Length: 152
Image: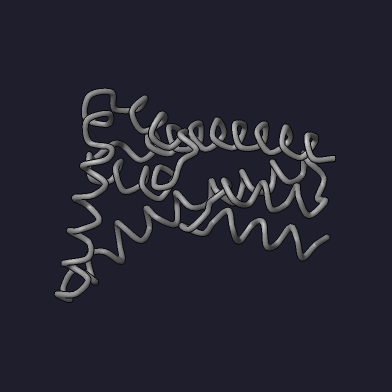
């Protein structure tokens, strides 16, 4: 069971799945339903401080490399296009809703980059991302529980 929890945590911090994959993985591998929610939520929340460290400190050094700079600009344009209208217009609630949507490309990674690009204060962006993650996890958890009980 420890291995399944660790894999669920890794999915939850991964940009390829986040808690949207971690929670179903844990539940379908017979991890306690409440523990799966709590562990995946907590792991997903840890992404924001890591991303802010990366964007604040590492970004400054890596932008010197042309390959990194081109990739960063491409990602920034994509995030601004996807989140720009909502974040620019609604600020805190725009980030919250953007992160809350349990669809690919709208998790805490994109929310962190959007908050960084729109220069949202750190504490405000952290709170918006955390609430958005919680609501997204609750939706995924509920849908997973409905599916799991529908199968068994």
